[in-house]
Length: 135
Ligand code: ZN
Image 1: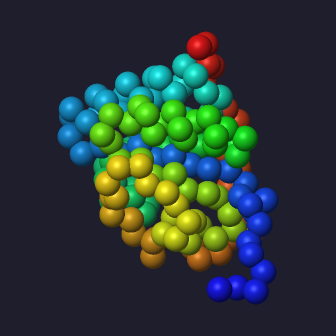
Image 2: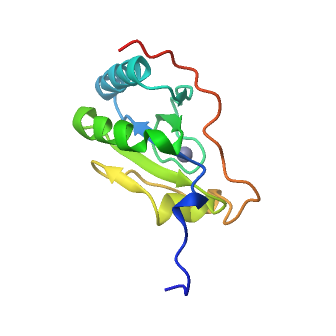
C-alpha cells in the first residue's frame, strides 16, 4: 500500500488488444475490428499475425482516449465473441500497466512483462484516430 493513492489522471489513454489463435478466431477478430471501426473514433493498430512485444499470441491493438472507456469497453464485453481481450491503461509505468492494472475480457493470454520498461518519461497517448465511424 502506498501512502497516497495513484490518480486516474495518470492514465493518458487505453489500449484494448484483441487476440486470436486460429483462422476461425481471426475471422471473429476481423468482425470485431470492422464493427469497432464503424462505431468508435479510435487508433486501430495493424494486424500482428505473430506474437510481438509482451504479447503471447497474435492480435491487433485498439488505442483510445480515456473518454471512450465507458462506451467502448462495455461494447467489447458484449461483442468479443469468445475472444480474449486485454484492456490496459497507459501511464508512465508500462510494465505494471499490463501486469497489475489491466483487465481481461475472457481468458488470459501469456504476457511477457520483462519486455516492457518499468518506467518511461511520457505515457503513450492514443494517437490520431484512423477510423471513420458511421453508425
Ligand atoms: Zn497495449
